[in-house]
Amino acid sequence: MRLFSNIVGRKILVAISGQLMVLFVVAHLLGNSSIFIPGGINAYAEHVHALPPLVWSIRFVMLVAAVVHICFGVQITLENKAANPSRYAVDRQLKATFSSRNMIWTGVLLGIFIIGHLLHFTARVTPDIAPRLASLSAGTTFDVYSMVVGSFQHGATAAIYIAAMVFLFLHLNHGIQAFFQTMGWNNDHTLPVISKTGKVIAIIFLVGFCSIPIFILARVLT
Image 1 (tube, rainbow, N blue to C red):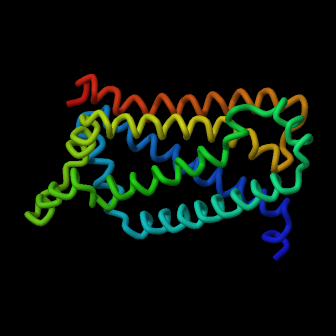
Image 2: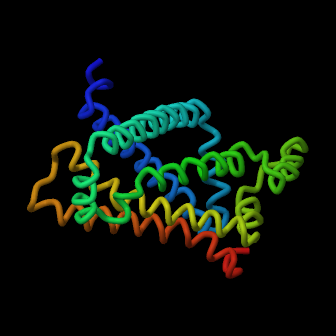
């Protein structure tokens, strides 16, 4: 298919797969924010896991989106570097931002974090989480609130999570704007608005996600 072989088609696939993951991040932030409501995150987790077909369908779509985004994103980046003369590349750097220049690196770091995050909170096989699974075998409901609070009370875990959210901010700071550019939905008049809107959305994600470990470290959530 030309969509996969043509660079424009691959850029569109990268853009669409990226925005699918942004939508997932929105839903994830809304769910995580229920930790600030007494009993909220446990109720949220219980409702989510009561719908296995929906959960696994979303996981499958996100896996496909992630594979497409990573594979074609890296391929396009390498092709662009190989095709552009060094002088042209230097000229382009003058208009580029830190976020746009380091999309591949923030993406790689986010990918590594996501794997660890899934092992930690989804698969629950990390050393600090696995012992808590004994409560499941005893027939009791798994306490997601205690799991999250207990994990982020460790400074190193909280620091890694906050650093990953900084990478997410940097990635989306350029990625949201790039989506509209790739789809041909912006122009000289709309570009500043889209750029500022993308930055605001990225900041909301940064503050929203980071507030959880920060409030736990500050003993506001215990």
